[in-house]
Image (cartoon, rainbow, N blue to C red; front, side, top):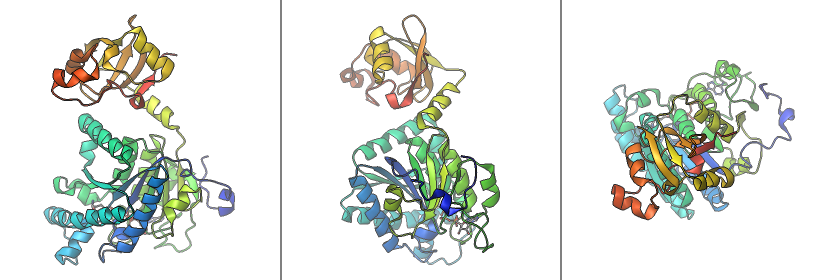
Length: 387
Ligand SMILES: Nc1ncnc2c1ncn2[C@@H]1O[C@H](COP(=O)(O)OP(=O)(O)O)[C@@H](O)[C@H]1O
Ligand SMILES: N[C@@H](CCC(=O)OP(=O)(O)O)C(=O)O
């Protein structure tokens, strides 16, 4: 599908990508969360929390990426005009984040669901080791039925504050946890063919392909003075999320029961479809690594587990380690004859992996002083490369 669909009748039987989605990242912008800067919108946060809780109870995994710290901090500090100084924006974010996260914690707890605060920077997600640590923490939280509430760690960055780009953070988180879908809730019903605040005759876009260059022409900057990214960062976020196979829906955050209705398959908002399958995208990413830093050689039993049974690679099946790599690098898995059978993300650096060859996980702590993971390569991070 490459066309931009503005005719509602063409999508009447369309189910949307949320119905079958198990792992969903929801991003809400500052203007929605803080009622256009008037202060935390308790009713809205309460409503989203009820929906998140209901979806978690259905067996889905939900992550909330929420902006609003700066806007709420400004309100608490009595500042009417958004400061220009980065250190003042950072101070406002630190003050506002307290109230923001407390409100999510309380509202979710009232619905019987636990939450966790996670503060990330773009830099965290580009460093492989921190990327893996963030990933494994988030996946553990999801497994426990906890809803992570994520924001940028505004105190330690300045460019993120300047560009205020939590849409990108939402997409990076979707990629990090390999979400099935990203939902971006904002103050418009979705994407229009032009900014509806400036062009009242703009048409609504029901559906398009994520990454379609036409969308970037339609999207403009922020319209409210509270939000900072505007529609363009949402379009680019959808393109980024599509890289790992996640489709994106941009919808109005005040739409009644928006999340549950989307999950029932109602075509609300603008749906930007990813045209790459999840595993395909991941496979391509791994296959794109032309030069691998190392490899582990495994015995025939391990080859059978990986190839025949789709299992993770455990150190007990490894006989030797080749090269010099760090945790998070893509490495090859070779058979005893030296043939590459798979590739994947190493959970241990080569120096540690050498100590773990032929060892069972009960010995990891004694050998390394800590246990990062039981697997050398988790099956979620592994692709078979033998034809
Ligand atoms: N083509 C478009 N369709 C819809 N909204 C657009 C478009 N171009 C620009 N916008 C503006 O983007 C705003 C949403 O972005 P932003 O204010 O950053 O919200 P948020 O805080 O939710 O991230 C809308 O209020 C709207 O004025
Ligand atoms: N992280 C900051 C800024 C993020 C921001 O403004 O993003 P958005 O409202 O989604 O355009 C905050 O919480 O205020």
